[in-house]
Length: 270
Image 1 (cartoon, rainbow, N blue to C red):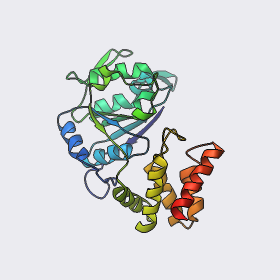
Image 2 (cartoon, rainbow, N blue to C red):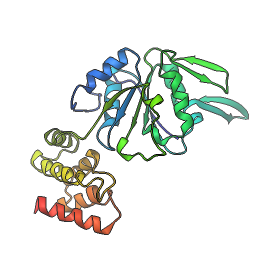
Image 3 (cartoon, rainbow, N blue to C red):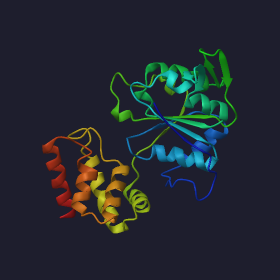
């Protein structure tokens, strides 16, 4: 189980950069003010995780981030008894710590977790705002400031990995997508240090590659990968090699598809 904990940062220079696409900042702040859980929907690498980090810092709240996966269980989130110094000691999981401390708990790609995870979340996503811990007999009331945030990629689901309507309808939901080209270029320039003219070409290429999703590719290229390519170019790597290692190789293992992507690069950059 992967959990990353970031302390409260408050407003100012320490707030991670995030360029809003719409009213998502205002919606998140309104949900936080009313203790409402938030669900973020959108493709991989479109900025959901950065947005949550930005909002946690903006609100001055600690952030517990959990990268969900097939083996993630409710016990991984809540906690378990561990042997320490010859004694069996209860150790809180990231969700329990967030509930006790009044922090934000972010479950990244929540549909990847085991089914028992969503059952644990239900009492925290209604007016009870409690976390029952069967192993200790506790029933923890969420501290002021606690907020549950989850994300998933609807386009990458299969029939075995969906959120039930009974779970989805417990959240305020926002849909994310890749920024429009001029905004995405601004983000990539800011993150990589590459000049805007060359950045715009990479963003145009990303848009063309995303158009292949569902045909030759399972997923389009993420803004994160565009930033990687731009960072390599800004560091002195040749453009074609940077695109190869950051925007082609990570997307597919199929030689024919890679050749098609290289043809696309040649058409855009000559």
